[in-house]
Length: 158
Image 1: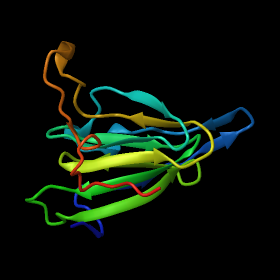
Image 2: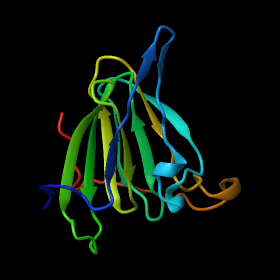
Image 3: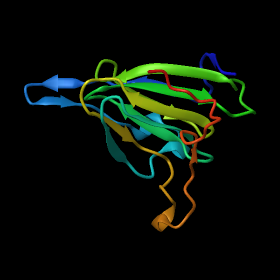
């Protein structure tokens, strides 16, 4: 069903580590590099243990802006499930993180998952453009989970 290829609306941006004697610094996002509709509504970090996956899932309205900068490396999976997209059916897989730091914009309707493929717990930052569960956490969660479906077409290789 899916074929390898670019996905419309997905943007991968290399992240530059600035090192000095104190350690390093990275810019997670800059407002002058994002469309105003994609500016973050919240920011969070998650730790994922080696071998563990998160997803696959998708959002109806939310765009995710992930930052994979280390520590650790992740295999990121993206599937274009948007029937009206010029790249419907495309799949992308990237290894990102400490070895290849990137920010990744994932638009609504693009199914996504990632697995920690490193040997240490890894960090991922997300700067979504919508609040989780809306203002005051009073709205339905904008998430379609595929990892619990027996008939899911979204598979992660190991």
